[in-house]
Length: 300
Image (cartoon, rainbow, N blue to C red):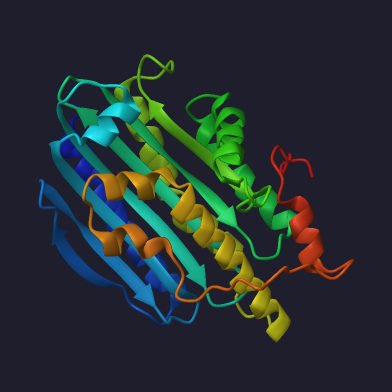
């Protein structure tokens, strides 16, 4: 029987699996854990890793919160006053080396006391320098997970990610996208609630192998001061998106979430160089040219 308690328990297990996998991948740093309680109900387990051999800063958060639905969220969802329950795992990793990409994942479940529920989540990749072969592998791995449940999921959720992880004021995508979905339930798909949950779990468990593939042959590459500055600039774009457009950030703030956990997605260091323009023919210019919607990474 699938219920909110079981969903939260398995999400918590996935957090453990991912932190174990990332500690092994980093090989040096360990996660620090902080347990917290939300004043309105529920709480979570924040795990932060810093100053590692691979990861400069990263977080793997688990939360399960509940209580009266705030008025601002009621209006956004178009529902009457009632209680809510929300649980999920969220991850952002900022690597040391500019040749290794930033990665984000979120899997979540939301339920209202009226009985309405939905699943949301996704994984997206933000390379500082886009390598076509690695972009192709990343999207191929996501498609394999999606195809287990619905052969239309990948195209639909890839498009959703392209549209969501877009920075309108820069007219560029945050990275190479991935898959993103929200408000999935039995009535919006051909899947049962159990199958939707299994899809969420499989996506969560694909995180470590997908990122390991990106890290290989990249973590030990040398880099210049120019490449490090480019990394800081791309991190700045990441900050802009997360603070201005990200729905999860807004939801956390509107529901009186724990601010340190909400903003764990931000890097330790970022840069905003005035009127930056890449050198013609440079790798930086090549990457900017690919930060567009609707790129077919599988056949590029």
